[in-house]
Amino acid sequence: MSVFYVLLSWAAQAFALLCLLIFIAFLGYCLYIKYIHMKYDHIPGPPRGSFVFGHALTIQRIMKNDEVLHQQLLEWAEKYGPVFRVNTLHYVLLCVNCPETTKEILMSSKYTKDEFSCKRLCNLFGQRFLGNGLITARDHELWYKQRRIMDPAFSSVYLRSLMGTFNERAEKLMSKLSHVADDKTEATMLHLFNCVTLDVIAKVAFGVELDLLQNTTLFPKAIETCLKGMIYQVRDIFFEYNPRNRPFINEVREACHLLRTTGAQWIHERKTAMQNDDDVPKDILTQIIKSAGKEDNMTKEDEEFMLDNFVTFFIAGQETTANQLAFCVMALASHPDILEKVKKEVDDVIGMKQEISYDDLGQLIYLSQVLKETLRLYPTAPGTIRHVPEDRVIDGVHIPGGLDYFFNSYVSGRLERFFKDPLTFDPDRFHPDAPKPYYCYYPFALGPRSCLGQNFAQMEAKVVMAKLLQRFDFTLVPGQSLDIRDTGTLRPKSGVLCSLRHRDNNN
Ligand code: HEM
Image 1: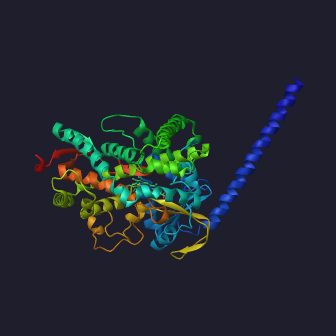
Image 2: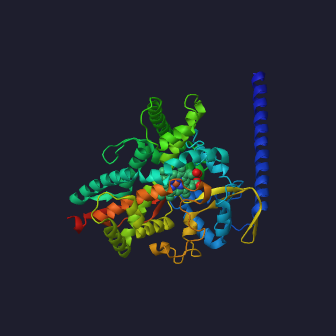
C-alpha cells in the first residue's frame, strides 16, 4: 500500500512540475509576443482581438461565417493606408498597397516566397501535396530550373498549337448548353466551366481524355476537397488540432492521395511510351518528366518531385480559369449594355465560324477588356506573399526587416485610390488607349514568379466566352446571390445559375 502512495506522490510531483514547466513556457512565449508587439506596433493596424491570438480570431470568425477575408483586408486598407499589419500569435503579416513597393519587391527575383504558406501547402495535413513544385518552391535555383524546363510548354508557338483542343472542348460545352436551351432548363455555369477547364488541362497538359461533361470521375471532387483543405491549412493554424475536424482532414488526405496516385499512373504510362520511343507530345507532362532528372537513375525523391508538379498544374491550371469565366458571365448578365457591345464584337470578328483561330483572338479586343475587368473585381487567385529580409520605409513608415509582405490584388483592384468608382464594372478601364494601371493590377502576380499559365488561361477563356456569346443569350435566374465565396481562390457563391436561349442568328 505504501508503495502505491509513494508512486502516487511521485506522479503528483511530476504532474506539478510539468504544469510549472508549461506555465513557464507559456509565460516565455507571452514575453516573446510582447517583444514582437513592441517591435512592430508602430506600423498602423487594426486593434487586436486578443493579446496571444492577435487577429486570428477575427479571421476564424470570417471563415466560419463564409465571408470574404479580402473584404476585411480592403476595409482595413481604406482605414489604415498603404501599409498595415495583421498579427497571428507571434507572426506578423504586412499588407502592402503601395505601387512603388509592389514594383520593387515583385519585379525582383531577390525576394523569395514566404516560408509559412509554402511549407503549409507542401503537405496538407501530413500528406504531401504541392511539395517542391513550381508554386511552392522557395529556393531560387530549384524554382528557376523547373520554370526554364516548363517554359517551352507555354511558348506562344506551342500555345497556338492548342487552339484545336480549346475549340474542341469548348464545342462540347456548347452542345451541352444547347440541350439546356432546348429543354428550357437552367445551367450552373460554374460547374460546367469547371468540367471544361479540367478537361482542357487533362488533355493538353497530360494527354488524357476525361470528358467530364459526359463522364463522372472522383477527380473534380478530389480537387475541390484539396482546395478546401488548403484554405484551412493556411488560414486556421488550430484547425488540425480540433478532433471534430478529423473526418474532414481524412477526406482531404484521401483526396491528395487520389491526385498523386493518378499522377503516378499517368507518369508511368508516359515514361513507358518515351522509353519505347513512341511519339509523345511536348506537353506539360513531358516537361515534368524531364524536370525530374535522368530517367534511368530516378530516385524516390525525383518521383515525388514529378508528382508535386503534376498536382501543381491541376490545382493552378483549372479552377482559377473556371471561376473567371463564371464571374465574367455573372458580370455580363448584370450589365446588358456591355453584354450587347461584346456580342457585337464577337459577331463582327468570328461571325458564324465554328473554329476560332489564334488570329481571331487578337481581334477580340473588347472581350479581352471584359476579361481583364472581371479579374480586377474578382481576382480568382487574389494575392502573393514575399519575404523581405531588409529594413525599408514604406509611405513614411519604417518597416523592420524579416517580415512577409502580402500583395493583395482584390484589395488593390477595389481601392478608390487606384480605380475611380471601383465597384462599377467598366471594361473601358482597360481600353488600349487608357493609361495602364501602375502596379496596382496584378491578378496573375508580377515579375519572375508571376503566373506561368496566364496566356494559356486567357486564350482558353476567350475561346469559351466567344463561342458562348456567339451562340446564346443568357440571363441570371432571379433571386440568386451575386456574392463571392472565398475558398482560398475566389468563386461565385451561387454557381451562376443561368437560363439560356439560342441566339436568333443561329435559329
Ligand atoms: C484565370 C486564371 C489564372 C489566374 C488568375 C492565375 C493566377 C496566378 C497567380 C496570382 C499566381 C501567383 C501565385 C503565388 O504567388 O502564390 C499564379 C502562379 C502560377 N500559375 Fe496561374 N493563374 C491562372 C491560370 C493558370 C493556368 C491555366 C496555369 C497552367 C496551365 C497556371 C499555372 C501557374 C503556375 C505554374 C504558377 C507558378 C509560377 C511560378 O511560381 O513560377 N495558372 N497564377
